[in-house]
Image (cartoon, rainbow over all chains, first blue to last red; front, side, top):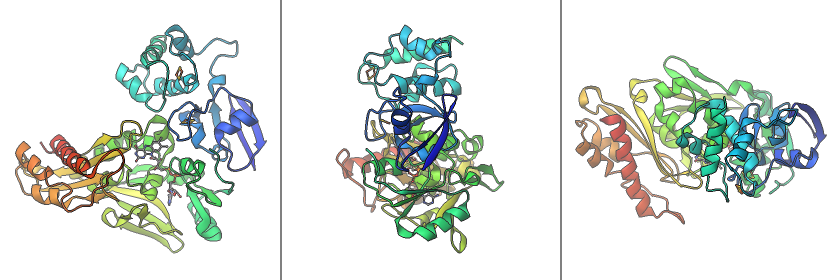
Length: 153
Length: 284
Ligand SMILES: Cc1cc2nc3c(=O)[nH]c(=O)nc-3n(C[C@H](O)[C@H](O)[C@H](O)COP(=O)(O)OP(=O)(O)OC[C@H]3O[C@@H](n4cnc5c(N)ncnc54)[C@H](O)[C@@H]3O)c2cc1C
Ligand code: FES
Ligand code: FES
């Protein structure tokens, strides 16, 4: 079946099987491999992106469900001149990553958080990132990275 | 991690979804938010041959204050329920439950209708739906019918919704008692599904419990009202002692689930603790 959507501002359209997951559509059809797959059980959040303004797990959606949707992935976050998004800058500034596997998902969930709550407390950040697992950092620097980004606006 | 191949249809209306269901019969499955179904399809626990997506049915996505009740469309997401001012003010137990589901991403996609139709024994909504005495609007080939919360939950994974029917709306009465409700949950730390969830609504005019409803999630094979606790508290003066005495009767005579992480005895004990916490919160 044909599936069309707008990804990072670009209209795309591909013929895919109905069982194609959104994350496969991005990684395999569009070559956008910034969105990661970290689990089989919808738990880890590595695949998080923004779909029509909301953070979602792209491993748990069919591409077909996203017909006509607006998708933003980690590749679409920086400005066109390469200036990093404040949250990306925050992760760099505060060492919010080690291996980086969870980072795209962490950043996309943080984008959602700061939209809904521009000035989150420590607790609120931890709560908002409950759907994103990190095996490396112990989370403290991730919380600091999000706080750093919040303080920039 | 890839589902078995299937045929996909996107319905534009409830009528179209019902006719697609009639056409494709038992092998067709309805897809709402997909957050129980797609994970199950990926693990090949669910292998429908036809999937009928309700994602395009925009008139199931409402939350409306109708005066004597709040009408919640089946496709309203957990986030819509969690962030609705009218639900917060008039049915806080439902808000509490929605806000406690999984994580932000799951709440952005999962729907109240999908959760209510799925009837996972570990789902959060059944307790509050029972404590708020909500009713479910079910639509099938011969029209709509309204089913009360107490008749809705039938058995493990089974509700009053028949294979040729859709759950289209949930109606929550807007009574002073429902405005005085809450949901207290003991969550599994990794999945955040409830080990025990207890919803209560209390009418406490004049310091006496003139009416109370207590609904449990995650404790039995399906959500249930606990008549032990309700009977023990109704008509009593509300105090820490009367609440504890009533809460300590919770789950008497009820089959309580046990699983690899929580034994039956522990879950029963925690049911009493969470009933006490919920009753204390809105009863005192
Ligand atoms: C990581 C994770 C954590 C979660 N944690 C929790 C939690 O803590 N508490 C909790 O309660 N839930 C939890 N869930 C489940 C979540 O709430 C689901 O969203 C919900 O159970 C199903 O809703 P859905 O809209 O995604 O339905 P779907 O998955 O699309 O459908 C579920 C089932 O209901 C049927 N169906 C859907 N809509 C209708 C309808 N209108 N009429 C008739 N049949 C219908 C489908 O055919 C299917 O069988 C979690 C899910 C995930 C992935
Ligand atoms: S890959 Fe783990 S939640 Fe999507
Ligand atoms: S930085 Fe390695 S998983 Fe988070």
